[in-house]
Amino acid sequence: MRIVNTVDEVRNQVRRWREQGLTVGLVPTMGYLHEGHASLIAASHRENDRTVVSDFVNPMQFGPSEDLESYPRDIEHDAAVVEKNGGDMIFHPTPEEMYHKGFSSFVDMTVLTEELCGLSRPGHFRGVCTVVSKLFNIVKPDRAYFGKKDAQQLAVIRHMVDDLNMDIEIKGCPIVREADGLAKSSRNTYLSTEERKAATVLWRAVNKGTELIRGGEKDCGVIIREMSAVIDAEPLARADYIKIVDCATMQQIETLDRDALCALAVYIGKTRLIDNFFTEDI
Ligand code: AMP
Image (cartoon, rainbow, N blue to C red; front, top):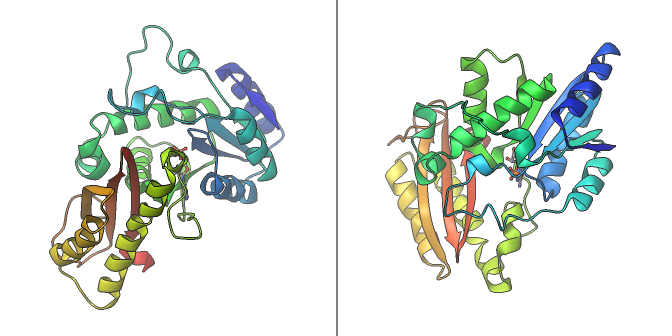
């Protein structure tokens, strides 16, 4: 398993793999890898001859008052996770390697980014689309792996690949959770002991939503109100949003009459956590 820091090193290695007729999977991450990332790496390892994991805290997808500086980093730990799960190379560039002086080209998206995290985090998906496009151009993978934990991101990437005719298969992988239901996230490390306990409220709200839908509820307003009540009952929690959107357009819907995504973002103290479920998975 190699760790490389430059675009040229990635390209040279991938070129050698291609000459041998090998297939390549890409797993884009911001590092500080946990079992959620590990599941993506393992999936890529199963489905491709070689797997590249990018490990880059992308400044472009953080807002001015967000946690870019404090975002946790540990490349040695990441190397062990990648190795253990069958990854072959980590691409760990500096911000300067990715965004050279004078960088001024961007990939952006309209409709799908108007709601949910796109609304709460202006410019976030422009940063995501730009960096993922760059990674696709650098690695030129056959397949790329994304978690359903970031459901809007997965939808946006699928849409971008379709819109821009990128010849890459996008694979969505299930959310990996802690034993008590909290979705694994690098940001969980920000939580104090008390906050960590409170953070299970996202999972409790998800369960409330899925229970109602299993019981036949189709009114999105009712589902959202009941889920909000779960969040509001937790003193350390404050909902940023709880919404139900059309899977294809990421626009809000009022009635569950098609495949939908129910997504929530909740502040636990100062830490913003996300969770979701797709109605097709219930
Ligand atoms: P991040 O490092 O947080 O940018 O995440 C990198 C990739 O891992 C994204 O595609 C995420 O959706 C995915 N991911 C993060 N957490 C989880 C999780 N708990 N389960 C599944 N995938 C995850």
